[in-house]
Image (cartoon, rainbow, N blue to C red):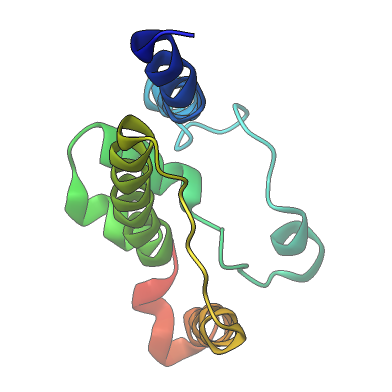
Length: 136
């Protein structure tokens, strides 16, 4: 196996993931989630009236893809932060794949608990009257 063939093989997965994400964003960018009937309603919202941490995520992605960062943050701030986090991790992954190094992001359990806590707090606050600014 030549050097170029190995590099192409290593880059295939991160580029494939980017292509899938770009395809999903292109679809959401072209099919407006603000128009009723295009996407299903969140089951938790429909059954309980409670906004989950993902509610507003499609509207956020639509606004983001159209360059409206303010509207993206208003629709779902956590999702919008996630887009930037994905881009940073993907960039790191691509560089490491180019160099022939594996992508290893070892997060201690405290980080996962922290992420869960932030999502829980976000969910609770956006469903309370004083946190309505976080609701889509």
